[in-house]
Image (cartoon, rainbow, N blue to C red):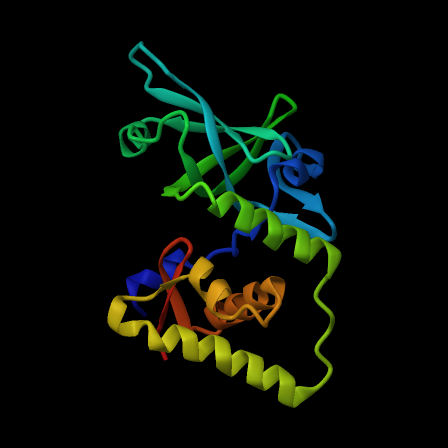
Length: 210
């Protein structure tokens, strides 16, 4: 079994910050597990916003706190230890995509980032339109088996076609398959991960395994 399979994990939900702030945090005793939102158990997220603040510690304990704003709300990105150097170039004023783990401590919901990627500022509007479309048009159940197979084949074909480039980002799959609901794409990729047909060489990117 390839080592990359250890990266199998929950798909990061594409959400607005305002949605994360109203989601209900669920705990196992005192340990945070995930947040409930619209019937989803959200533990990993994919959000887009502007960095409006950054604070870096000056003592022995290395940490950085960034504030992310997408127009619907603000949320903290908390970075500790060696990851501080990993994200040292991410400064105030940048538009970024953040993929990371949702956390809650002392009644504060925040994100521990895995990936922070700089984007063109117009990408924030694209994400806003994308999430609004999902909110207004929830994925309908696929009852037609032929339609289901066609959708799965489209998604898998898109992943296969990117093998020469070392895989494809989830964002790019969604952009390439605009005719398929984002939530359906997320669900089908998760199934392909669970079946061992594809794998994640790193969070948010998938490759064909066969």
